[in-house]
Amino acid sequence: MKRNLLRTPGFVRSAKRLAKKHPLVAAELSSVLNLLAEDADNPKLKSHKLKGKLSGSSACSIGYDMRIVFSIIQHEGKETILLETVGTHDEVY
Image (cartoon, rainbow, N blue to C red; front, top):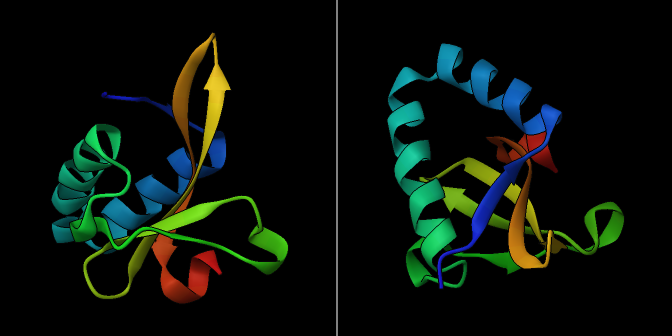
């Protein structure tokens, strides 16, 4: 089941910043978002639940040091992935 992706303003800002700083990662981001919409538990994404201040959210990998923080929510009666932020490991945690 393909889920809808809902981008927060914070995700949009961080994605634009990421595209400027790391243009090669921007193309990878698009393919990871497609894979995330198809199957958030795909082993290629290395998805995992977060603890602490980000408890209730999950993260997945875009290559070695880049992460997407997201939550799975109900939106308009459908299960939706809420994209919270994207960036390096240190930026998002």
